[in-house]
Image (cartoon, rainbow, N blue to C red; front, top):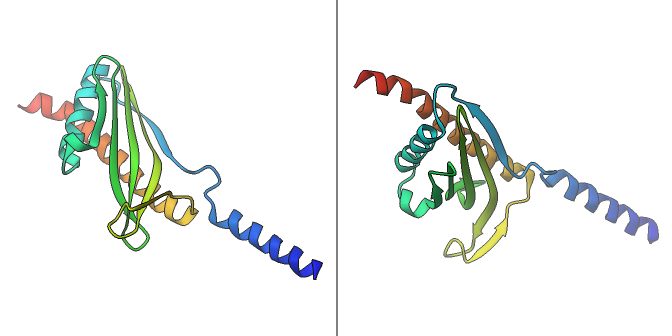
Amino acid sequence: MRKKLFYAAAILILWVAATSAHGQDKFQEVYKVPKMSKQQIYDRALAWTAESFVDAKSVIQMNDRDVGKIIGRGTARFGFGTPAEYTMIIEAKDGRYRVTFKDFIALWGNPPGSWRRPVKKAKYLNQLIDNSRSLASSLFSFMQKADQEDEKW
């Protein structure tokens, strides 16, 4: 009986370890834009937010041009279309900026959000992090277009 209980506990521990994210619960990357000042990066990031999200005013929770920081709350879908909220932070410095996506919260239940739980399963976190990576890439492309657009108008 003890052996069966021991094996059951070992299997449970291995299953939990296999399905958890092992610290991979955020996406963070620094991007270099050498010709841009902190204020230019901040302004472009704010413009990207306005163009990339349906309702930028509800997404942006805090923005401070002097500090060069934008904090927002966005939503994405994972698994079979389950919605999740996340925190997005854009921090600007002269010639570079850092993007962080973290605090992924699943909005379970009917209506969605009636049961909120952190996303812990690696499979789902990876989907949300891939979505975050795509958004960060979109922001970087938007920053790259800034130099071209300034020269063409």
